Amino acid sequence: MYLGIEGVLFAHRPANIRPRCCQHQPPRVTPLPLLPAISRLLAGLPNVSVVINSRWVCDVGYQSLLRLLPDEIACMTIGATMPGNRSHRRSTTASRIEILRADIRRRCPARLAIVDASPYAVPYEYLAQAVHVTKAMGAREIAEIVDRIVQLLDADVAEIDEDSDFLA
Image (tube, rainbow, N blue to C red):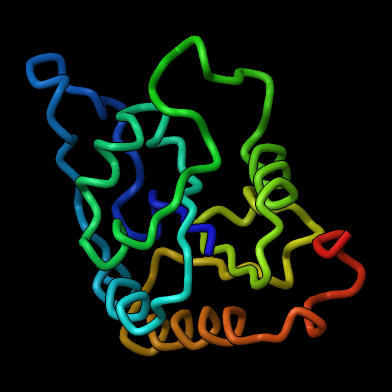
């Protein structure tokens, strides 16, 4: 599962994510209602791996971001689509779409679910495997999002959109 952080688990990325006085401490973040639901979901799906798809990795570093996450998510996380906060490793020319596309092709996941708050961050060929998280989330919307994630993660590989080049 490719998991966006900003707008999905935590409120959108603040402009001053790296406070000057405490640069080695994780930033203060505001959890969103979907955070506990995804934590519970992943606790019940031990065979699911999580890849973080967020610019926060560049801002605060992979390990710092993992420390912000509940154990249920952090323990399932196997990597990130973007390099950490070492400026020499950042790619300034690649968009989130290009980075995500390349990572999916590199990892070749058997099942694919992309959970993100930005509809513009998902490559068109993977839209059928995407779950778009909106700002207004009540109990019904959270349940629908979790159900959709479960559907995507439980789908057989043969059922994935044949028009996508995911299986190529």
